Length: 70
Image (cartoon, rainbow, N blue to C red; front, side, top):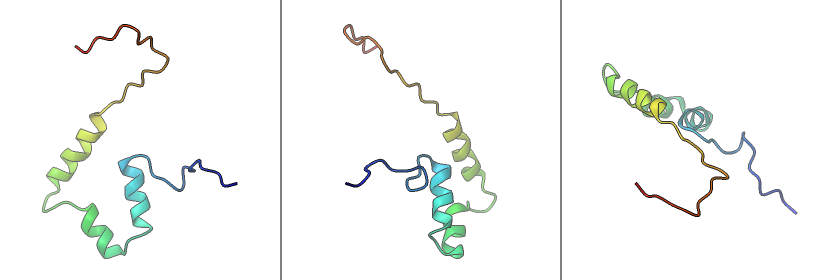
């Protein structure tokens, strides 16, 4: 019987882990191309900042008998 639970090392869970994972699987030239931004990297910096602003709020064990979709 195989274990169906993925370990943290086998499956990245966020963008930074995907980047780290890619570094080990791509050639240096390919990794540099995908991980860099054009010219002054302003858009790259803005995109990273935007992802850092995203917050997930887990709602576990919440009573859902009366739902409000507002």
